[in-house]
Length: 209
Image (cartoon, rainbow, N blue to C red; front, top):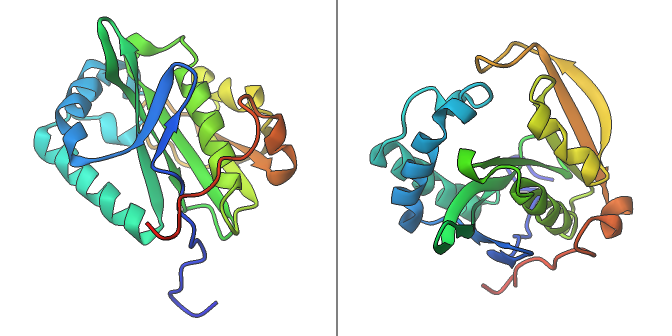
């Protein structure tokens, strides 16, 4: 591979219709709902998310969504809005999730968070399962990781439900107020993807798009 070349040439599909939720590629149209979701959930997110230490603004979220579009096109990360029923709204923003190329060649990391008033419904588990299947269906991807702090009990409960194995514990400096110095690294590889809830791999996006 030449210097500067991208190892990941496939892209995931831009939409997944799942059991009770839909994942859609993030867009600038998400800005108002995303600001509201983050600010509603600050107490829930602050212990674990370095970016949630200050209230969200249209400017900060607009910049995030702009960057998400750039990194999608570059093949470096793929951000999705999680949408579903919230109160009387059938297509409300419930949270966000993504695939990130930051753990080495051949691997993608999954990240996720859910609005404080939408937890306990399996939303993050459903989203993470879909992203795992999608990632392992991309050309060149052989491993998916989920990383979380050892004290983040809710987040750490998700990977084993999906068949991830605890690969190692990394000692590092805490990045958010609720974190310890122990990060759990959960791993799934292509051998176990067909056992995930929801079935087999999702096909990648049409390369001609």
